[in-house]
Length: 198
Image 1 (cartoon, rainbow, N blue to C red):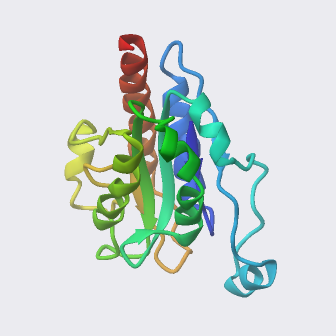
Image 2 (spheres, helix red, strand yellow; image 1 turned 180 degrees about the vertical axis):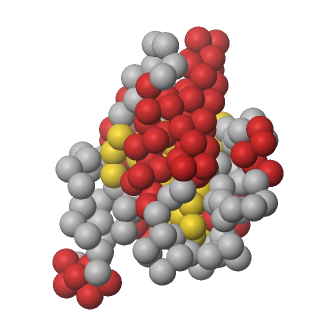
């Protein structure tokens, strides 16, 4: 299951590639969900945010149905966007029963700049996984040479796939999308193994 929040569409583009990567693993069913928006329509209009896509909105009670999760969000000052934090804050009942414990989880993200949180955003988000007993699955350096690209601007880190949005006009590059596909495929393989061992 891949849940995301995307203001301008950058994280959604990564999510769609991650979904394709996961679906490429035999026996894996990938589902894409978005978390609820918390900003009023008037504020979104002032921000110039495009309309939300038709991807279904998830509720916390749907999480236990999945065998693993990749959570995607833009950064806000080095941590996850408030919309996704609000979603996690609504999972108290699942935390109380440890309904998600032992399942695989990871992150993907978007920042506006190179110093904007490509590592701090997932690092500060790990606390959400820990309290639920989720098993953090980073991509490490499994993306190979793409992890060491220095000639082109590339988001992402060993924590997960990422992109740079800049002022919102920059879209995810082919390399960033390839890393997202890789993360989906890699993560799905790990989640499948974990499920098979239980």
